[in-house]
Image (cartoon, rainbow over all chains, first blue to last red; front, top):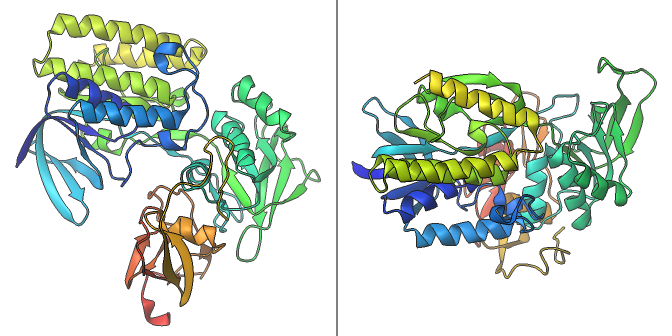
Amino acid sequence: MQKIEVAVIGGGPAGLGAAIEAGKRGAKTWLFDENYLPGGQLFKQIHKFFGSKDHYAGVRGFKIGEMLLEQAQAAGVNLKLNSKVLGILEDGSIAVQENDTFKTYHSQTVVVATGAKENALVFPGWTLPGVMTAGAAQTFVNVHRVKPGRRALVVGSGNVGLILSYQLSQAGIQVAAVVEAQKTITGYDVHAGKVKRLGIPILTSHTVKKALGTSKVEQAVVVKLDENLTEIPGTEQVFDVDMLCLAVGLSPRNELIRQFKCRTIYLGHLGGKVPVHNLFMETSRANVFVAGDVAGVEEASTALEEGRVAGIAAAARLGYLGQDEAQSIIEEYWQHLNSLRSGQKIRLEAKKTILREGVQGE
Amino acid sequence: MRIDQHPILGGAKPSVKVKITVDGVEIEALEGEPIAAALLANNIKIFRYTDKFKEPRSIYCGIGQCTDCKMIVDGVPNVKTCVTPVRAGMVIQTQQGRGSNAEN
């Protein structure tokens, strides 16, 4: 069995951050990703990131992805693509499916950075070709450079829905409208402003009632909602669209966390069940660390910083740097993290709850 | 429909054009792009029909998680076309049900 020191699961911003920090301090670090391309969802982010200069503010997501891949290579990280981590075995080793073969690895530390999955929304016609997640639309348009349709309806006015709407426009796909069940737009004003300036209506207190079409989406029926989110009869509007994009939130991809028997708590503001952890991103299971959306759905910038913390902590556990040194670096990262979360008070509080629980749970 | 000009991403990526066959018809694809991307670029939107109700399906998640986009590729059923790269000469078939290609 192959013996390694740090096994990072997931090659998005969190996993790359962890692998870079552990690898550059000398730890034998392997990064497993089930996809054939690394970077997670960074390469579909073609907009500029926010934050301060320390957080790549003003740099487009895919450029950050390219920089991180270079840093991982320089740090000597062994990048294992097409490698899906299936779970942990009784002896503590991890089982990995690599193409059509199965392998086991014994790793002294593990960083789980599996990210999040997009929520679904079920309505009549939702299985028709043309209905897809916001992430799918971004992937095809921004990464593969193919238009899945000509005219779209976007469901959800969070940042994902808003960013998708202007990215579709940039690619030459018309956006008929953005619909939002809540009374107000749920994403940032700066993104909403861009959408509005393009002349795309954002219909709050509206949702999609059904998708119509014989073999693919031809029309979407939108309906107004009252204060109890109940449909108001007679308010239906029909949009001629061949794409219907669902941007209705994300949930932590926590299957491995649960299988690793890490203690979890439910925090709705972070997307669902999240593992408790301490300042070092270590879970209730010793030597298992977490980072990024799996530890609470936020943004790529926070995922990257959390990943760096987990990587430094894993390297310290292995003796590649002193515990005191690690602690002071990590405390600095937490200041960055808290400043990134300063505009998201509810999320900041939820993350504090995790830390409190993480300390108590030890 | 391909996006050859993009205000942020610029011109088309350098790529090698190859031919693949979809339900007996030859189409142009780019080597290494997901099969699903090649199909959408050629305006092919129905990838399979479900087993029980024979309903059409296409891409849904686009990143290899949901399996809605599975097709028969070089005789092998249930291949996730959104994460399977194109190679020259691939033979793709619309999948019926669970992937017996008797009907194809």
